[in-house]
Amino acid sequence: MSQTNNTSLTRRGFIRGAGVAGVACVAAGTTVVRPAHASPADEIIAQEFGAGSASEGAVDIKTKPKAENGALVKIPVSIDHPMEAGNYIAKAGVIVDSNPKPLVASFEFEPEAGKVQFEVRIKMAKSSNIRVVAKTNSGKLLMGKTHIEVAEGGCLA
Amino acid sequence: MAVIGRPKVRGPKKPVAAGTVVTIKTLIKHPMESGRRKNKDTGELIPAHYIDTVEVEYGGKVVIKTKWTGGISKNPYFSFSVRATASGPVKVTWKDNKGGSFSSSADLKVS
Image 1 (spheres, each protein chain N blue to C red):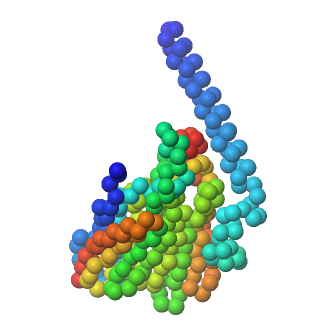
Image 2: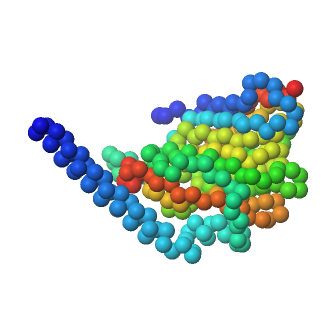
Image 3: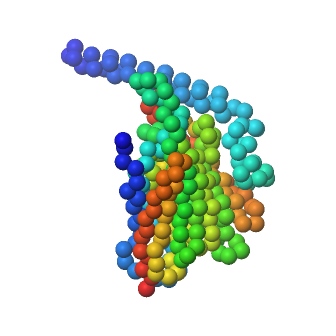
């Protein structure tokens, strides 16, 4: 009987601890994300892809909403857009808003790629918004957005 | 010293019809040190050592060119698509910021 009490106590203690850590994570995340109007990530997107509004919908980021290991977060991307001479995705970039270097990877495609569908695995220090920005050969911008929660271990990194 | 290299490129083993978009998977051993990590014992920064470009060549043309940073996970996996038009190698070349260059290819068979 006393044993059951003990386990329930430790479990409660553990949950409380986890809760506090979780709050700390979220707080850290919001302080970084807040200056959304001219964040380093936005500046880099403007630099690399040019300013302009990006249409959403075509870029699909098939990540899981939670990543257990911040050192290895899978980012599978698929862009629903033709890849034919004269009308293709020329460039794409994976942007992690809260990373010190937000543009983690960029890709240049030729129509021969057939379809823009790729997967990379990235490092994330903490939970963050992930954006994939793509540019067609005619300069049209496409964007996909998602948010990935990185489990506690990632917060300490 | 960690192993660096051993590039692997895998495509479909069986012949595919011309025009099919196929997925190619690649893997390479690399530490992908961003230059921001510290050696726990000495407190010194571990120098940056990461793959900064990857190129995919098919049919005598570079079809995908990528720029990577130290934000890519170590021993990086990378998959992509190409449209199979003729039998031949899909060659992938990785280059790192210290001048290392690795390449490997997969033979694509088009029926």
